[in-house]
Amino acid sequence: MQIGYCRVSTVDQNPDLQRDALNGAGCEHLFEDRMSGAKRDRPGLTEALAFARPGDTITVWRLDRLGRSLKDLLQIVADLDERGVGLKSLSESIDTSSSGGRLIFSIFGAIGEFERNLIRERTLAGLDAARRRGRTGGRPKALSDRDVLAAKAMLTDDALTVSEVAERLGVSVPTLYRHLPGGRAAITV
Image (cartoon, rainbow, N blue to C red):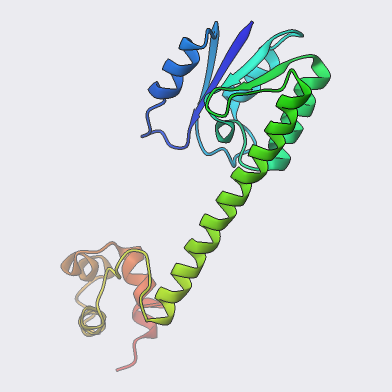
């Protein structure tokens, strides 16, 4: 029996392409996850692996849907092989029920891991280059330096509460305290 497994990295992504390919390949049962492949606990994969019996084949659209590292993929294939369960990848045309398929599987897995590492290195290098140019990522600060000065001035007035100051500046009280550690007590006149 062919058992299909599909995975998308986020809830917003759509697994229809994978489902259609797996159904077209003759999978009788489909299991699915909507989470990063880097996560160890993937309920859909756990169910698919538990459902498989000797002689069955776990079918995936691409190897990277099954695991994110070569070590992870090799471990899954070794466990499946020990149980008499095969692995088939539709995109890479790999079927581990043969020795040639296992060799190709190892090569493609290594190439995929190499590609992910290159992407990660390029991303980190780009972020580092941006930082050296003075650019930082993330959300802009909720309060400008001018807003912080205004908040300090307002907080010197005992008639205004911290909540009222935060409301006037359009931020929450915790945000105001992040910009003014110690709050009113830390303000020197």
